[in-house]
Amino acid sequence: MVLRLNIDCNACYRKLRRILLNMKDLESHLIEKRQNRLSICGRFVPQDVAIKIRKKMNRRVEILDIEFSSDNEDEDSNNDHAESRPFLFSA
Image (tube, rainbow, N blue to C red; front, side):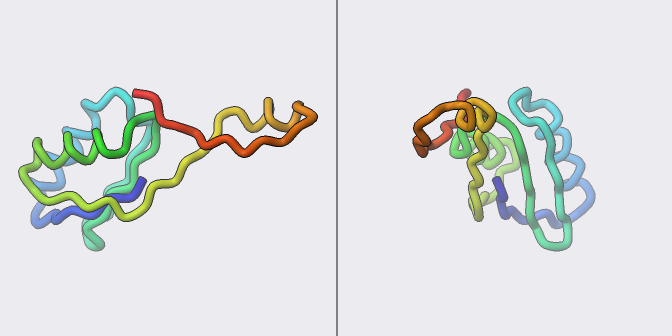
């Protein structure tokens, strides 16, 4: 998921990084300070993470892109019928 939020200074960057490190559902994150972007990966509900960051940072957070990935790709290739099932993030 890619988010946009205003990261003005180093203190804002450190605060955001500390918030992300304390979130248990996130596997990895990338903070692009100059582009004011945050990319995060993991198993979570996108809206819940955006709301949590907004409340803790006290800044507007905009969701730019949500990419769903399937952990069951191997299981789907073994099945005779190919169903396109949407993957839902579990909280």
